[in-house]
Image (cartoon, rainbow, N blue to C red):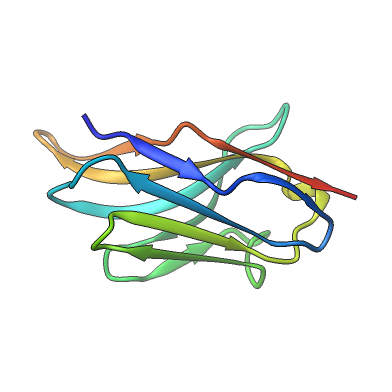
Amino acid sequence: QVQLVESGGGLVQDGGSLRLSCAASRIIVSINAMGWYRQAPGKQRELVATITRGGITNYADSAKGRFTISRDNAKNTVYLQMNSLKPEDTAVYYCNVEVWGASGYVGVWGQGTLVTVSS
């Protein structure tokens, strides 16, 4: 069973930066898209950014120009560099990785890492 280990969350001041990482717990035969989502208190989980196996990226409007998603296919790891953080970025951030299984690609979620931006 694949497990995703997230790290890099924490407390940062308004305007600060953080880098999130999400690594698979074992070598995976095939990974398709990888992405980051977030869920703020009282709100639904929302897309932050995704990246295809070929490196094509997609960002939520709130993340454009401030966040950068990247991946290291050799390490089965996806990163999210977050700059110019704002209090409204406070949320639990989850990675999601599409892993090849018996029925095709299946999305696997990380456990989440808390990001708190103080004003």
